[in-house]
Length: 142
Image (cartoon, helix red, strand yellow):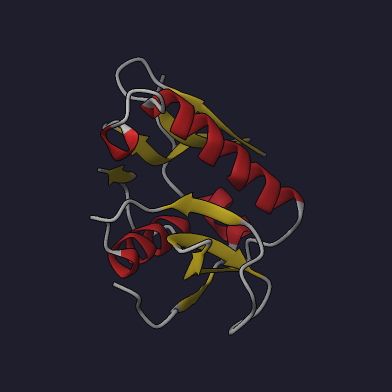
C-alpha cells in the first residue's frame, strides 16, 4: 500500500492497493493563489504526509486542529489525542469541519468521489479503519 500522486488532467493524491488505485484528493487550484506552490507540489507534499501517517500507523483518527496558527487536518492516535501527523494545511477560505467531513466519508468508503480541494472551531475526531477502506473503496480505471 502506498500513497502517491498522478493524473493527466489534475494532480491527484491516490492510494495504491492490490485492487488498484483509489483517488483521495484532486488538486485543482493553486495554493494561496501563489504560483510558487503549484497544485503538483501540494499533491506531492500531501501524498507524502499520508504515506508518513500510514507508515507510523497513526491513521486511526483524523481531526481538525491548529498548528502554528494555521487550520489543519491531521491524524491522531486516539480520540481526543494530540495531532500526530499533519495531512493538510488549510487555506483561510477552507472550512475545516467540511473538509474533515469529506475526508472522513472518503476514508470510510462512503464517498465515491475524491475531495475537490479548492474561524477556530472545536476539534472533531473520526475513527478511520484504513484497512477496510483499502479493501472496499472504489478503484479507478487507467
